[in-house]
Length: 234
Image (tube, rainbow, N blue to C red; front, side, top):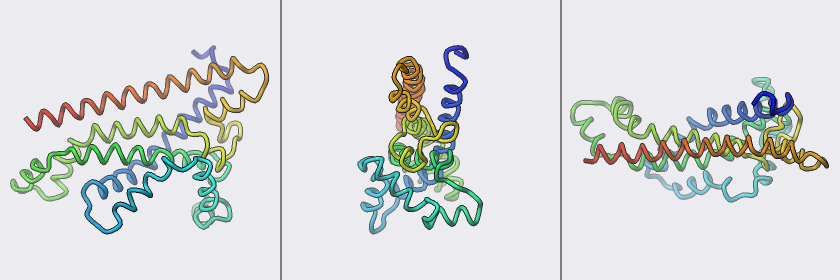
């Protein structure tokens, strides 16, 4: 494999894995909190919150990237705060690519975790509380273990979505070699160069293999989660 890809292409693959890994780490706590609110919460505006969470799925990715520019650009309120307070710049940097990927992957992760939480048998939680377990212990010993396969599936699914992110990334973070050029952007760039069919094919195969592996793992975890819950129900 080392001889199949050039050093520049390996750099693209490494950057894609880095961006996707950071993206799902950013998403995990937020996705779990939102999924918990949507699965267990009862409050005014729940439907609106659900719609806002899933908005990146239906918006053109370029629009999402433009909104990120407004909020996290050099003159945006969030971008200026991060730069002045923490010295963290996002625009035209790999951190910006990670943020764009995180925004696009968030709805899928929230949905997967929410479905997993909704399938947890609330009677088991009630039984744990009846035996003296407090809310935190019930969550740690009953709810989380039952929902964990769904959470892991959400992580893998979010990773797969992040690997394939293009529109929001190129709009917000641009297409800079060695800094923001992930697999989709590298494939797009190679397509513009005559005679680069081989480069496109190699990068496309890597992209397909990574995404396919992530989807297979996600589906396996989801099936195991369903079987585990069915066993508890029996």
